[in-house]
Image (cartoon, rainbow, N blue to C red; front, side, top):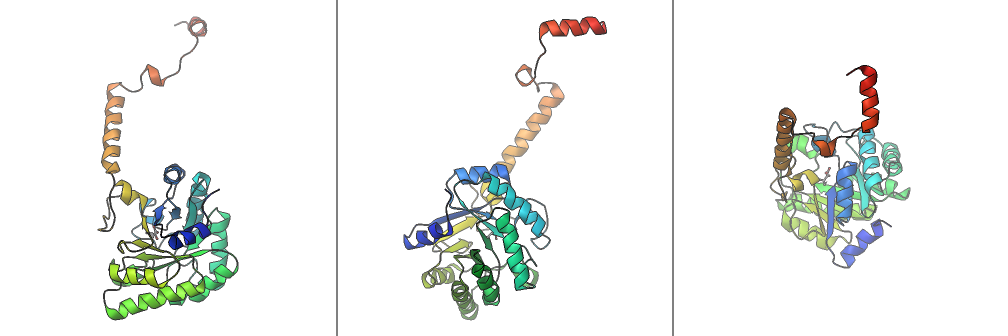
Length: 279
Ligand code: KIV
């Protein structure tokens, strides 16, 4: 049985840190799940790292459902949370509920959406139909980037107060956890002490209840943006390019494929064939 929202809520009570990693495809999701990471997040960052968009704005519900289905086929142990993409929940509560339902039918256990108090009513409505919601405040890539670019949030007293209020309102609206993206670590700590639901930080310091990273950043596979907050555990892109260069050389020199990699006919059948075609 895979982890549930209740397990994640209990981890905060038991003071156990929560690990979250993004996943978008079957192969990598299988490895993430096998590693024992608590939550697989099908983030709309898929738009950038899987589809090559400049940002997350163009991501569609159909794309998020496809990524969610692939990850759900791989997942055995972790909780699976999927992002509602830009404009799939902002225009109306009806959109928000219908699109959350689509992600659940695609295999997600919960959905994540960006926004503070302005999203409280929408979150309550989704939670009321039985779909668990993860909130997301601080840097909100679907909207903040358009007006401010990638900027740390909560660096002044007033912006910090706004974030703390947002977190409280999300908790009241019924979220089971809150992502804090690029929030100054002092404010992230205050929010984590203030709300009873787990906070999941990305670029928000060590005192959040859990951490999330984009899997391509962790594995060193995405070189277009290298955020300060992302820790690279390996440089997979270098290894991949080296391996591909070696493959190309082997193809060109005839070293690949070798006998180990091909299939043979029965000798007698080959002789009969040669006799028939006269070679
Ligand atoms: O889309 C995403 O990957 C996210 C995480 C970075 C939190 O929202």
